Image (cartoon, rainbow, N blue to C red; front, side, top):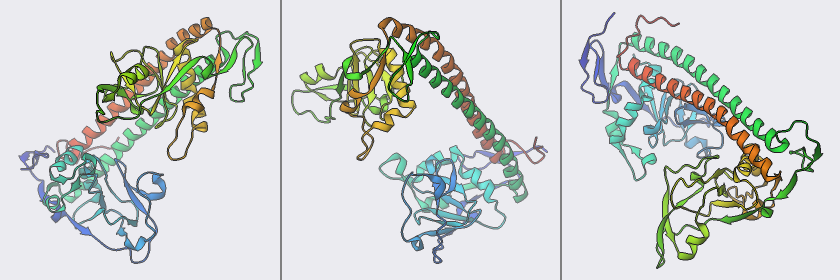
Length: 430
């Protein structure tokens, strides 16, 4: 069976099979505002790109549930639920549960002859979500609220009901297979990351000579170290400086310069895609300027995440969410590996201050003990780890790219099938 195509008259949809129609959302769905009069406490929520989830499965993300469930709105199985402030980034889905959720959400009940499963794929279509941005209003991109009046007159494709079900069955099957491949690939990446951490751990704590005489380090998580190595607090072989407090306006006589914040301090390699500027005094310029091989350690944010600065920019400074650690006795990259180990194993997380958000203060940081081999051994370890971790990183990059390609394929498949570009009426699920 081959489709003939006609112009749908809808910009984002373009051509559709000639036996399909188009209808407004208002004709396809009925908005439900049924109040939770029975006090149902099966709380639901919407998660970006995941759809409707049980609130208990959501984790500590977003708003808390209300103490007054009677103010909530009821949802039934197969209802389409929309977060009007975040639909353009994927906060929409079909409910598999009966329950209640915030009254700010839009709940749509499919009319007769309408498959909620099929239209979940339509509402999750990235091109359709992007198209809806025209009718969203607000001052912040991610909190632009949907204009409901204009939303209900948007037009969607309407295949025959049997074909709607064939499409959703086909996509359910295919996306499940793709999702399984993505999950297995992600598990492989996690194993590679564990292998990388184990390699760093063994090398920086035991060295490269398997026959060397060992001694107890006195630190439980480190265990034994080579007998000729020492354990010293960071302050004994480095200089630590917390960055400058944000100065958004010129107090007079200051100069505008780029600075790094915690977001820029990614693991081992800095992210300079979004570097901001603030005002610095002459004294500040001398105190906070970064030099090659300075280690940057997050004081806030993801506390303890560490990178090394290799003059990726000709001139840059630091904000007070970042500690600069200048190694004065030793090899910076050797200590970078120890910082990375302390971060990924959760050691830094166990010592940070947690009054509001985690803070790895200068005082705490300078007391952290590090393993100190001779400078020659440090360099040998760096040469070895640089070579071996690069091999693992390349494998992780390959698998990460595989996930990206699978996601792109999944989105392309959904787009082609739900808009009728690919006919699945005679499709075989294999």
